[in-house]
Image 1 (cartoon, rainbow over the protein chains, first blue to last red):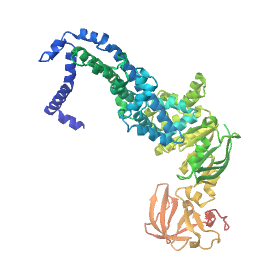
Image 2: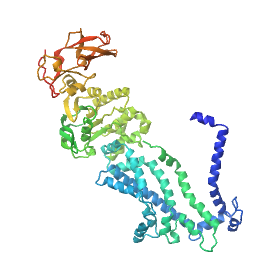
Image 3: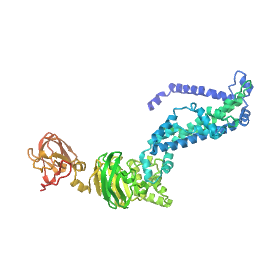
Image 4: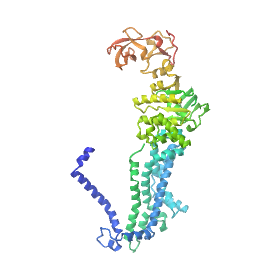
Length: 282
Length: 342
């Protein structure tokens, strides 16, 4: 390994870096275009060639997006998305931690059956069960509400499965030692299992937050009131229908704003996230 | 400290009975070692005392109280696990204090008790460290400290030294013995290592396939094994067994005769009890182990002093021992009284 690094010095190293930089630029270019588009005026966008450097409308466009938007203020949509993403991420984590705990540490009749039932739901994508789910949510009167946005997406076979796998690697003696020490099951869960799952929880939080943030189809179905729109579906709602003229700078500003929270979550939790994916701290 | 009583304790997993009824009265402050090969049920027995396994039948009493159905925490026991089972995210201090915290012991008293235990175990400098920053021996000490601070009625050790290297094992063995003397603890200690059993035990239980073959003081067990299994398991190198008919002149009910390696000596070819050919000799310095192949094809080991000359490999030689030193067994593997005692 060390030898390889030494050999790479020189021209090879430069080519490697050059390749990587070009790759990054290619990936970054559309985002850059979106950013540029969000800082110019509408006529500047539609007049070819499209500008490649930011204009002077940055504050104007973003203020317009955040405060008034097109259908609903983007600030409101950001807030809705945030509530939904947090609700889904935290809810999924709590529920799957508890169900994995039950499945791994308690012997109850039908334990395997329940596990496989949970596992089975993995096989069914959201789209397949979206109509019956809509039925149920509508029946409960949860359309256009945060609970309607969050609850149907909160059960997670993936997260349950992940925590189950992690709990199974925790030595049995640890549970026994806690029992001898006098810890009741929930105490063991809270004092020992939970802190040991810290990195896994962090990694999962990042993934689930982004999953929740990027929900498109479900919010589109159940939120008819623009003030309950989430930002990802809200962007699509901003597109003009018929002969209306699209306000591209505001739409682009909204897109950039929609990207920020996931980026902040990833960057701020990067350390824990990577640790959760690579090492098993035991 | 307390007494412990097992009364015909049995364990069944489904239809299979794995422990066929073990009874023992452990006195206050007595150190009992349960020794046996893997799969003999010794750990299961210990876990039943701990309350981690249900008792299928029989009774376990701690200080005269039946505890069969009590939770581990209500039994007033502490356990040291084979792989230490330290909580990886807690510091050494928190590991030792966890049980006390759950019992809602006042903070000052926790600090005091952990401090005392840490001092005794020379862990004072490591109290803030995490288990992964400790060596195997230190982790072992933390596991023992966790047991000590609780001041339990009975200590349970489940092969606590088997994850340590040989040198550390000897050292920790001495420390456990020392600790036991200082604290006068009542303890059950499970091991498959007969040296640990011999050195630590006040009395030992030799288990074989779910049966307590013999219970007694180590030397008594060594001198007077009650079954062929005990004779073969306790003592290293193992006892030699010879079919009685090849020796002749033994009572009819004796099926096999056991001779400890140290009780046998070389004799001139054609003399002594049996004849054999020296296959190889292991010179260990203080002693030499001679491995012979008997005419019947079986191996026979003699332990002799390192200063006694050793014949060349392949030499035909006689083997002799005093018949009074023989341990004879019936065809059921149980001891038959020595009739020819000189």
